[in-house]
Image 1: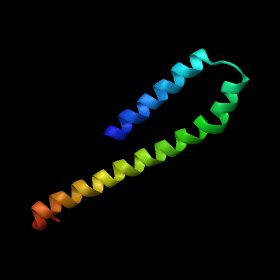
Image 2: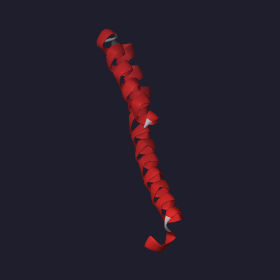
Image 3: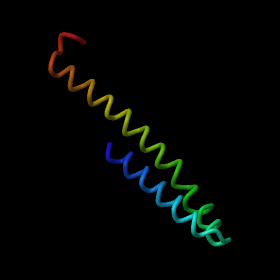
Length: 68
């Protein structure tokens, strides 16, 4: 899923940045912004996976409605 790849890349970029940027300002940024984003992205990922499952189920039912 494209969102998962983008999420992984964002996490990699955060890690690369914080390897170089280790001062109080970096910690404040991480605490204020990065820590807020991670759970939200995780929730969106779960919701997208669930939506994909629903769409797959609906597509199967449309192809063969007698199997429901």
